[in-house]
Image (cartoon, rainbow, N blue to C red; front, side, top):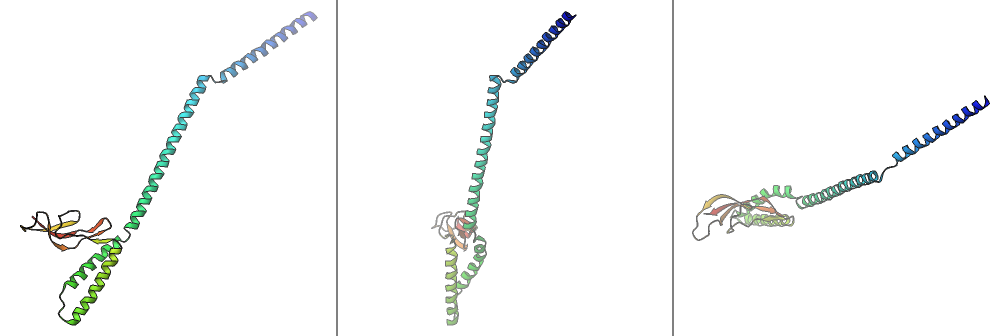
Length: 190
């Protein structure tokens, strides 16, 4: 019986060793499966490179958008500074027209002439102040008609002048820097 028990014990030990060997093989197989093959690593590297490239492109687009925004903001600020007086100057143009008409009236008495001289001085002072802000009177008389600066309200026919030339200025036009505030109203030769 003792022999039988020893045999059983030997069989059990062998089976235990076989089980342990099998477990080690399973662990090795699992470990081998877990270890990535070079192909898998290459695929992952390629994916990471693509992600890096995508992120880099996003960054460059955002940087370009920011530069464009900053440039637009600078241009808007410059335009605002350049044309900040536009509304005031536009409102003062009728005042210039009224002064011009008042000065054109012929004074009959000495007192009226003195008053006209004072108005003329005020008018010139106002014109100088407006010029310093960038207001420029549009030259129209005897100039080639330009629809960007002139508004034709009449036509005439003078043989001695070429066609398309401004014959008469009905109302003065003005420019602020490079922007037309009011075109000149003119009579154009046919």
